[in-house]
Image (cartoon, rainbow, N blue to C red; front, top):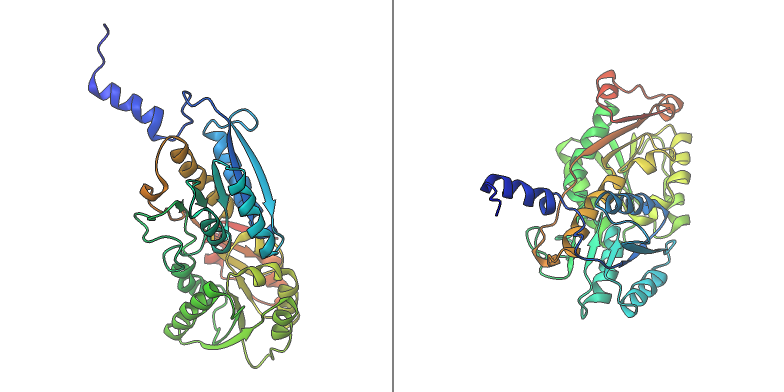
Length: 327
């Protein structure tokens, strides 16, 4: 019998299991129910599917996806979750705190695991008990939305030096947005910025709030990352440009729709990162034992076309630091 050195055995085991590849002994087709709140979060779904493919899960051969987009209809989101539970899918993948919360409630009495990517601050919002152990059937990737609020605001002051008055744009009825806005106000105080809250409880309300903003009230607009604000980004960015106001968002897909800049996660990469967690579950791990992960990289995206349109000159140093420049 051939004997292998312990080091060789260890390396072999790492290559087989540690790097996260589909166990070839598990010859079955996994069914994954995917549900998202709106088009803003199509990118993490794409990242998740690409990540699973890279891990050896070929679509139609080892895994199938039932992708459902609620298009901002929360009732539809609940219906998707109920159907996935009824059909006993092997896993539910979702993005945003809202999607994860709905999936959590729907699966509470089932063994179906839920992977979120991204989903705000999962501890602060009550999705999981702690970062180290969820204590339930959920695991996933946090967006660090709360932690990143101060950094994003600081980045805005670096992009547009001289800002003194800030308008916070958000839906006051959204629990997560309330917390992020609180964090933003604290960060603004440290940066010696005066803050004005702009509230909107629906699409028309959020647009009207920004239209009513006078030039004397704010030097820039800081968008809180909630679904309502995200889905009005084109209209809100256009209003801000009309008033020559810098408009700061949190992810690239929103910056691409007319905002000045974004600083935060890459949602596609978050989806790929979440795929590794799904692979662990399919290889026998319990979701409650898998620590919640954080983004591996943050990115700065600058829209220089918008900067030129509103008369803002971005410092050359920041343009060199930017991960992407939109022209």
